Image (cartoon, rainbow, N blue to C red; front, top):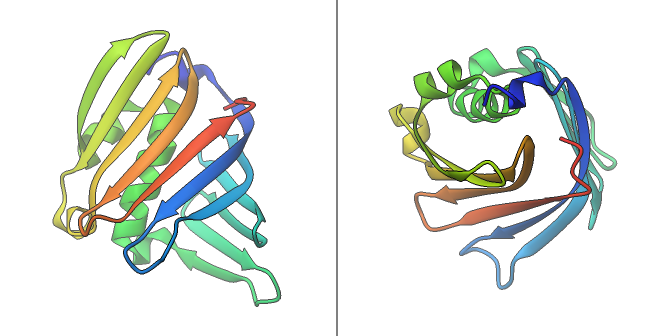
Length: 162
């Protein structure tokens, strides 16, 4: 985590597969992830549709193709805030913040590690069962979000510059 905290910018290609009981088959999204320490994270989906999420400090910007952009405060949405802060804290190597929000479990070695985050607070644990993050050295290679109802999302990070 200490070495992860030394990474000040990054970008990477991602492929996200979303599994939902509401869908006949999984949805596959592709695009780019961007990170600028300590608090700016952007997820830009390029296919099968265009969508952009930008988290900077305490605000979130959502832009969807042919729709009016939306901006909201993380302060007003505690569940989203907890998820965003967990992701940002992982990128920033901020173990103290992670441990305030999640029960953290590390395993593996430097070349192949795994971090499992289990939400500590009811507002998030009622939706998210756990978040599994895998990596090598300071690179994050996969993020899996397991929801309470059985739905999940797996983000594979390629051309990893995060």
